[in-house]
Length: 394
Image 1 (tube, helix red, strand yellow):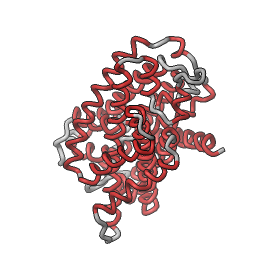
Image 2 (cartoon, one colour):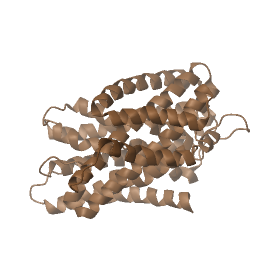
Image 3 (cartoon, helix red, strand yellow):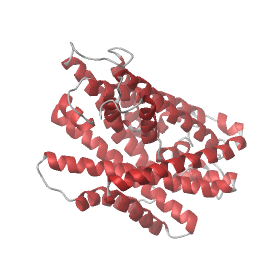
Image 4 (cartoon, one colour):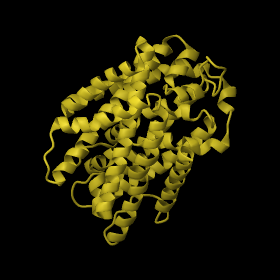
């Protein structure tokens, strides 16, 4: 409803949507680059993520009616924009769910010693049943899981940060800086809630605060988390000892080598945190994709049952994860680079450019940087996507 969202609530919703399982991969993807290049990319992508949020909000405020990302794309970019937006969302969510299943299997294997595939099936059944049951139980479960997740990561940081080794923090390989792009972009995606927040704010100018602080809070958390992990776990270690590169190769989350190196309660806290952070994201993204499929079917005047949409969402990632149970990092790279790159990076920029052209007289430009900034933001996304594509496939 219009006017019922305060700036503080908007910041919390946006930050809560961003913070998720991507945090588990950030230190791992920095095994080759080091902490300082990772922080640089976190800042740059954080800034362009703020602009992406502002472009989405600006377009919402300049477009009549209630709109979300696919319909905004259709209105300003036509059918091709609509289908590209859907494609970006689908790639992102399927990649995310595949990575989460891999982590779920790894954690059940780590905690209970059961085979990896069995752990994956247990995780899959729990999360998929919640996705199938619907919004009421999801909102109830997600709230408590997210609060618990924040407490867990706070406890881990309090224990791990005092034990960091400074020499590990200052190692840097600048030639590998862009190798972290895909996962960093994945970790910032939460922009699907911006249209609802922008529409619900009483003072529309407050969307600037929401966009800035909604990204800055995850940025600060990501930096602290990366310091805690990279400062305790070496990038490379002799065989049999924990390292960032070994964890990345085996598909483990960052909490596993951190727990082994720091010891004590970190092992249990980290494992629970890994399960909860991926589970909350799996449930939220899974339900969102169900909505996309249901809305698409309705727009095509086709009937689709609840069980059909659930199976369409959860079965493809399960099949992919079963064939590549250690593909956590690759799944998140692909999801962030191509899915996130499309529906959070490229398309919002193209939408706002077209919106400004179509609405020259009555437009509300709430975004800093003037007319040239969208093209700079677009170029940053394109460079990162191009570099990641070369590294992934060539």
